[in-house]
Length: 288
Image 1: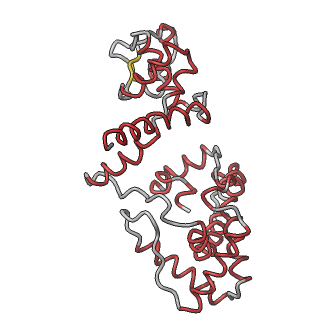
Image 2: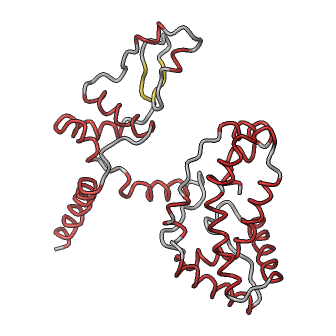
Image 3: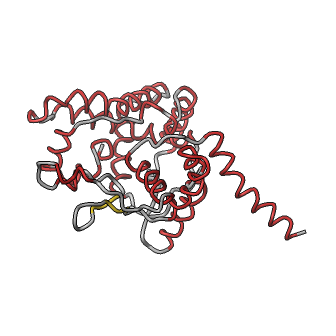
């Protein structure tokens, strides 16, 4: 009986990602990283893992070999071929269905099912990374409560960035302020509206800003969730009421499509790299 149950669970573990990947998985490589895996799977299926790039030798600019080398590859010492740099496990798995089903076959392999959680746990246990964020640890209402506390700080931060925007990158101000940071400011504005509707005045909002500043200062890198200091009972009740309202009227933070921004601002990032390396390393939105 126990053996039969084990076989049943094993079968489900194998079948589930296959069904999910076939029914709902993507069938395109949407970026240079994913195409690196797909292209290497094709190379493995042909047993040619060092493709030639003859055009390299005709390019009239310095370091032409590097400019012809895509993500996931490195150039051989003589510069005539490129070789994979990704671990071969996933491309090899993808190469098998490619032989039978063509390019669509590589997308039947679903590497994300389970392995991210396994390796997150392994790295944390080895002391090589922070603790992985527990799945489902915070409800949308709890996240909304964090938004209520942080709302005033976020709005003030974006306003200060806008007021002190450097003249050297004036051409990208609208892209960064409106398109990159704007969705977060508008989200924070909604949190402030909910806080005021719950009866919070300026003095209470100032207390929340101070609490959020303390939370950021005391945050530990190995703690995935920011812990807000204890608030006075009346203020905590008002925050809870505001969070309930925000959660009922706004899309949950994690599901809000407006927060998935992709804004090109190369001059701004270059300016940050030269003047504010810590911000450049994390990105404007993360630094906010």
